[in-house]
Image (cartoon, rainbow, N blue to C red):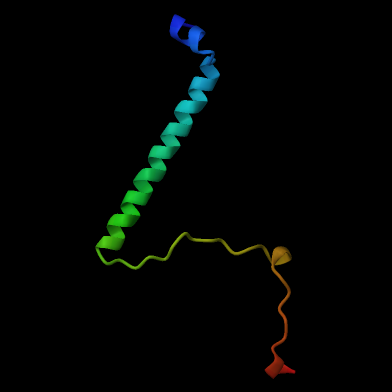
Length: 68
């Protein structure tokens, strides 16, 4: 460990994790920039895709009043 790391109190592992967080932030920024560019080009915005829940986690379907 070099003297810089010893003085700020961060371990090499903490620095590596922080670097991963910064890399993920950059990935998200790039994703947002692409989406904003697509919107400015007039492409439709479908938003964030959301997966459907597995059948056992889906709420039960309630009958409509007109079905009764």
